[in-house]
Image (cartoon, rainbow, N blue to C red; front, side, top):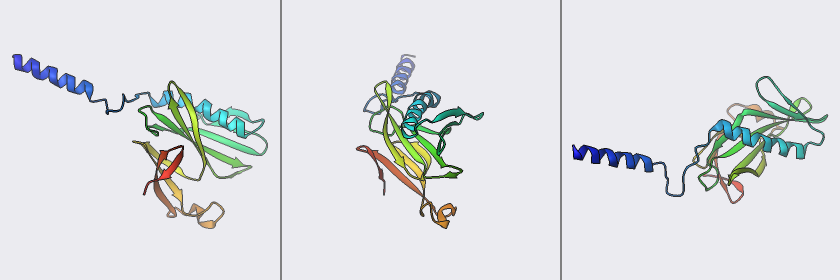
Length: 175
């Protein structure tokens, strides 16, 4: 009977310590809480890029900020959270759709890092990449092989999956 209690105690201690990866405690903040914190940062960034922008929210939750020439759209489903930098706090990547009149121009990706208790915009990238996932400090994206101004831009087989890592303030392609 004494061996069973000892075995149970060791099992519980091992399970309780398994969340630690050796470099700090993993942040278990929910994705919905992260979205609520990073969308205002994305909106502030857009307002700095778009003078006199007017904000509207659609029925599906998409946020549009537009003026007479340009329109930015934030889709909550296009906010990805996960570990991006070297700490154990969940960060976020926000994809922005940008339209000039009725035509989509290059999109932007905002990397927003958690520093202490707050989130901070670390990098804004103009790129037509489509984010697939943010996991274990690797950002996986579909990237077009051709520029937006060529007929092959929308070719479904002309996109490649590329993996990036955030290092020293920029995205670095992983070979």
